[in-house]
Length: 481
Picture (tube, rainbow, N blue to C red):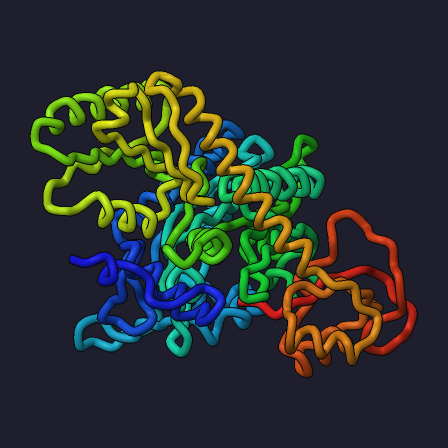
């Protein structure tokens, strides 16, 4: 196969959508399924998801959370127990109406999320304050009808995600849970995926249906659209009242429980692709890359092969001993040039080349994926490789952070607001009166919505962007995926 066959045929800044589609297919992250709206997660794509899982799972287990699993199918009557929540998902629900040729007595919903199926069990399990807190996490897939517009990792009819569902005695305990998980998400996204975020609360209109409030992490993609990266919700007592989740406190008083839910999905992988990728393919931050270093032998004569292969093996073992994940590409049926392009497409952070000259000088030739800088180091200076990986991680974050900062625009005039949304996109930082009518009108007229009210209160600098009445908060608008 020639390099042109595996490489990208479009540039990121010329056809962003096609560029994205080519990366997810050609880097072997996903493939399309025969079922419309569904995709196949290939081993390389799953290995990235697995790194995300490992990071998060380790941290929540240390906090006392346990994994559980609930059925995929939910009886219609159960969904209707929480009518407001259910109505929010109705347009997206897949329904099962038949078992073989027999029509079911009651329709079954394929879960769009797990609140209803989990909380019916919670009402049977929880009786006393001694049963609390209940800290459960689910790793599963959910199905939501996205037939019209499919974008692997971003919008598909089935997607992998993590959803936590916890139960507490008091609002204060629930608040702490929401904030604790939210901070773990922030560290994952910013420190491991190297993607900067804006953090804040959703408006009443945009919060999770049935929640008391929703905290959100929002990032900016290169095409100027926002992407919701993760959310953490205080559900209050809304669901506990609908599902009769009650407990006797220490004074033998019966009370409704306080609940939280929180989740991230494989759209984090989509964000990785969009934020860091370039015209040659993926660029994976070292902390989340399944393979941090690829080692490629370069032979000019057969007599070099034995010694170079031996050295490659020694270097690989040495890297493994200091917890640097690596892969030796010693295939004989591809040229070094083909391998370079192949691994650049797959986003491996660092490439080490060893040829006759490197061997004779006891050196390693190192090529960075983020900036293509080529350097040589002595073969035993493995700590330098760790430093280079650390620098790649920082460089990717800093580049994305600068892009975010350069695409936040303060706006006080609505005409300018409309023009920026149409032309420049990005985030618009403006002021709002807290009237939902203004929020809705802006969405109808521009297609943008309030992505968040910032966590840290920011100084109001104008009247409401839409009605020109006194503003009550600074907010960030954007069009979004």
